[in-house]
Image (cartoon, rainbow, N blue to C red; front, side, top):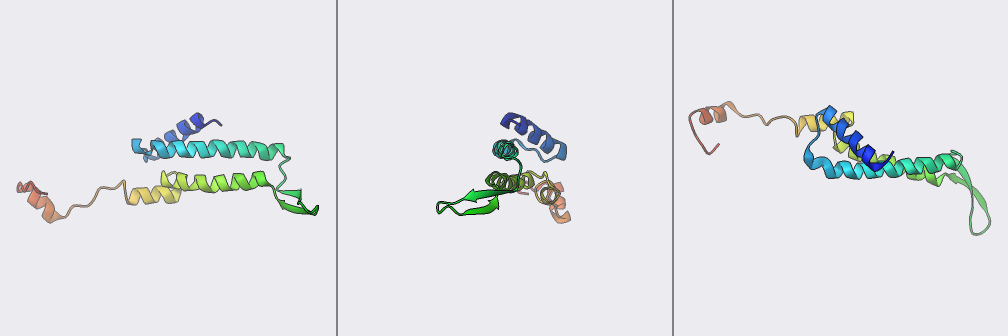
Length: 123
């Protein structure tokens, strides 16, 4: 998927979750870029045969088995993307953190409310 399509999908997910704020747009743009790169790496992984283990011949001529480099890139980009998903409140843990911190109004003490009612403008 292209970056623009990812951006729209992420923004809609944030709106559906109730976590979207306009100041998240840069973060959403960065995540969309990461996901586009991840999609490209997944395509490369599929084109390489989709094998998780590949043979690699080093400079000395020895052949060893190693994790497919394309799969390593996909895994790294997924881990990076997960951090952004969480920060945007699009994982259960991320949504819980946002709900508990940023989305709930600060509790005001009864005493402060009383002072406001009496007209104390400094509160």
